[in-house]
Length: 389
Image 1 (cartoon, one colour):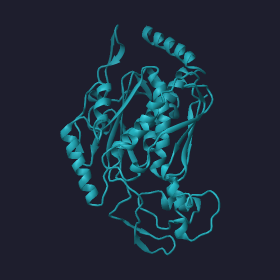
Image 2: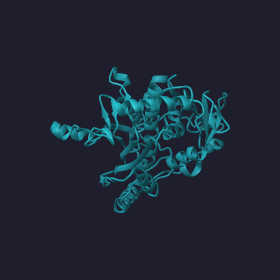
Image 3: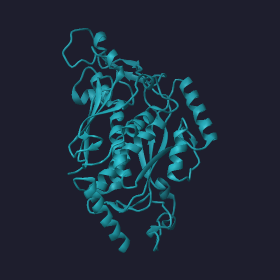
Image 4: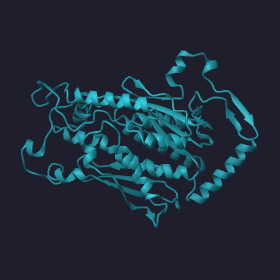
């Protein structure tokens, strides 16, 4: 069975819900580690007031017994603490009242799903769109990704992320072992390892917030400990780099993705792009460099996955943009919902989560079984095959 998940819930509803199907049995889950990933998503310089309201933790309601998965679907719930202020507005039962009572939204915000979703689903109250299209949904995806991380960790696969750029300020390449990268970025409010860059980024975020504006950036995810051959070259939709790219740009506000040297490859000759193949008895087949970010032909080549995503500035501004009222079709300046001046550090955590999910899914497709023990046998046999090739 293929690994898959669904999420449900609204930003001001009672909870976010995720159902994971296809996990093997006997995977030990560390609940503190799961909730730590949710905490990481809430951190970062530039976050708005919502992060002071919500204290995200995941409650597991099915598919786990005595700390281990059973093979049944896993149900995860992340409660919305702010629900108590929205019980009438977001009630599933019909209510009587004015547009003000229902907090109806009829003025779409530029850069959001409001107008497109309103037209597509024929909603005259755009709250029906923004409640679901909100980045609050990524809390459920981080919870799902946290489970995927633990599956990968059971086989020595590690996932890390850091911020590459905020605004025009670029961080130096860290070039650190993955455990040190994780530790040092966790101490930084903007998820960088260089103190001077951190100071410059935080100052820029503060100035941007004071100006009533927002700012975006670039984040990078690294996955180590991978075997050769996750993904496949035989069909377009089985190429793992393509699946990761789709997952990354599915994150709210992400508008681009690249692997390895990425778009820089357009400026270089082939001799400075492709990774030469080497062999030693100790390491087996490996590459002399990792310019392609761990992929060839849609498959992992044994080098770390290096993938970057670009996040646009959040479109909800305290310096409002022009829009058109759907009731009157008259111009106005867009109304403001709760907003972050910069969510790039938090987006790094979300990106780690969606990448971890896609890698875990490909891992189970390759080495699948109904229990961790069966998967481990399959994995060990494959590693022997690869070593003897």
